[in-house]
Amino acid sequence: MAIHLDAGIVDGFFWYTDSFFLKWKLIGLLGRLQKAKFDTIIYPNYSRKYPVDWLVHQVSATTKIGVDGDCTNETAMLKKKSDAFYSALIAVDHSPLHEFERNRQIIESISGEKYECSGPYLEKDKLDIKPNNSIVMFPGASVSAKKWAPSNYNKLCRKINAKLPNRMILVAGKDDDAETFPITEGIPGDRITIETGLNMISLCRLIGGADVLISGDTVAVHIAASLGVRAICIYNGDHFGRFVPYPTAIYDKVNCVLPPGFVPPAEAKYRVSAFNVNDVLPDHVFDALTKTLAVTSPHSI
Image 1 (cartoon, rainbow, N blue to C red):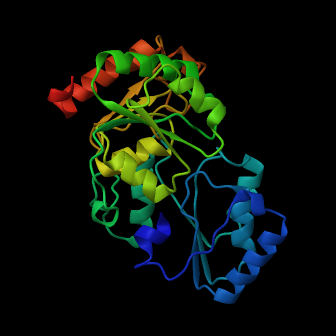
Image 2 (cartoon, helix red, strand yellow):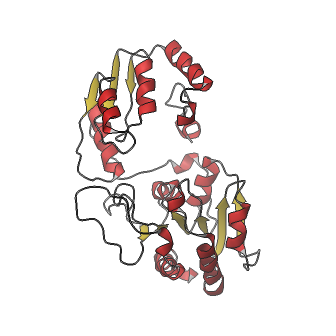
Image 3 (cartoon, rainbow, N blue to C red):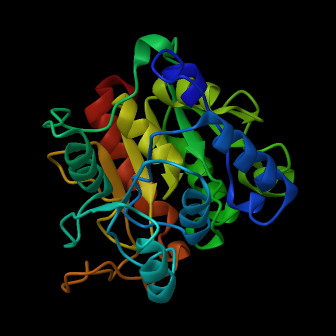
């Protein structure tokens, strides 16, 4: 996605994942970074990771800027140690904020300029988006606690098939047969199709052309928000307010369907939810879907 959308403003990319840590790939990356002879390094994440802090520490640069954030991704001891790796730490508001607002603060602090964008966006003209007039479903998630059961998706699809005219498109990974088969069981092939092995650009095009997206708390929801597509997020309430729900002032077209009885935490902190995402019932999601479609395309229901 970065190469496709940002190549015109970025001189080069050095790819890194945490799996590089203490492996030969990391040694190769360090060599390339040192050879680049940077003047300034900026690590703009509020929840820093120690492996990345360590990498910043190893690379020579006149100025190293980090964020004085929280300890979601590293212990307080490691954060205190790695704070010293930076020549400057950006101070931001530590009260609970949506990540878009947090990133706005970081960008404004780095640039010294006001960031005028009101919400997330991707440049549609670079993506060649065409309407597919479908309900796109993204059932996968990297964290199992965020995955709604295939049996629930199947019940939802059966209800859509029986009561709505919209086609369905299921997005799956190359190795997701074991999960996609239960979802599509009993649904006619002309009513639901499966898209597998999509890269990020193809995923953006698919979501961008949808009537509505149905997804767990995953990247797909944020792609929809960035492209102005309505979305239904099946969500157990973890870290409520940090990534979802979106504040209405930022984006008001993501409908989070939470387990019955869930109450947003009153304390001024992000919390792990005690609820299971499968406490959300298919009927709850279908009700949210019909309301969303009524707003998006009244002729479709």
